[in-house]
Image 1 (cartoon, one colour):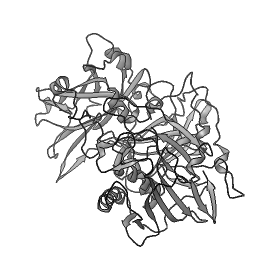
Image 2 (cartoon, rainbow, N blue to C red):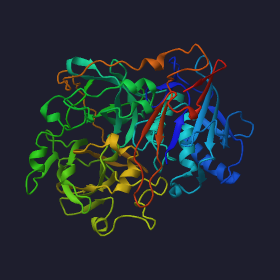
Image 3 (cartoon, one colour):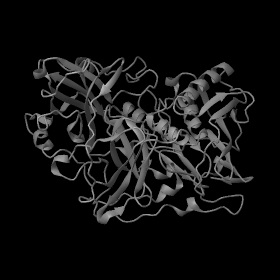
Image 4 (cartoon, helix red, strand yellow):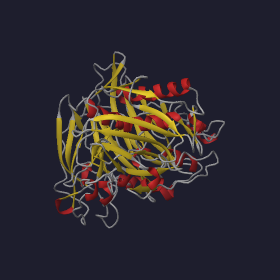
Length: 585
């Protein structure tokens, strides 16, 4: 059984997941005060149940930008349940129809949900087969309602394939709608290139937070390799990650032509780092002040996972040698630092946890003067860079004080961390397994104690966990190397809020160390840029991705992702109104 959540008009996606029309118009609501009415009743839910879940999904988006959607019985924009077979194929759970004018201004949008083939539920964990949690569908479709398309950021509500927890809007989603309706005062721009300085079209550029290692925004590079990240928050430090676009046709038709075979194999995901040996494996911090535009220059795509120079010599030794990574630098500690580590998939069991790295963080020269309740924030990110790892960390201070992420390790060994209904322990609001960890570790008032040993343990995710976390597993997970991002920042309390010591180091681009020797120029699919001369538009830009719901508790379920374009599934009947014409996508 496959489910389709699709944007149903001829559009292309550019920065973030913002949509443009087939002729290049950015689609937007001219007013930031929007209304939506519930047109009819669900056969499985009461009006009050539908309204409560809709309001919860609206709140997710209303907190993200100045655009605000309210439930209003007098609105011309409708949410309705339908059993009309002319609208849905049997695998379509919801569609969003949008009408827009000659300048790209949206004039009407309707969300239509399929009650012929699906039953909607109010309980997130009940999603199974033809039963779907209404909030997951509504939050995703409301993203289309405000003008966003699909995303390739794992855990984004606009991700093109379904997963439990899609009812929660991610920071990438927020950045997209913020850039569209609030403008963007903070911008990171640059160019992605490979060998012979050839620009790379369709590279996925992701901004990670240097504080907690989470994804903050994303974009896709143009034909020239140029990219612009917008909707970023001010007074923050970011790391840039460049990875191949895994399924561009699910984002927009124009990305169907994207290539990534510029190396002996496909180029791999990598963080933007300097060209010198001592920069390898260490993402370059990019700090954005309010209203600042930072041009980072040229970022090279990489043919292999880049880790610190001495990393593997200690990692492969037996016993493991401490890898001194966050050491004192010219007499002063590094306030913000991250490293990219790698877990070799064949070395990790799927049962017991195994120690994969041991890292030393030395902050004994750090002055704590003027810092209130100082701490070291430690964060580990594995899922959002495509690693199916179940992990935990033990942080041991020099005086023996221990901190565990996420919990006491003996609990991890003794139990399988599942609820009575066999779901992984997770955030109750999202039902997402907690494989990415972040926690504050107290700094000692005795500075000689502020040397830390960080032990990283990992095992392979169980099949059910992996299915829930990676809805498009085969496209994102390497068969050999599983990278992770370890981030550490010095912080202290400023009133009731956390403040951080900033690293504002000048970055250096990759013009002198371009990788991917077989890079060649690629043009976007021309079908997306064609102009319709009649009512039916062949090869329209809107793309469709068939997606499966999270599997059953026994772990059985398909992980296949099927891409459907243009007229390949006529039953979709995706309709768009433009100058009184209707197009099929």
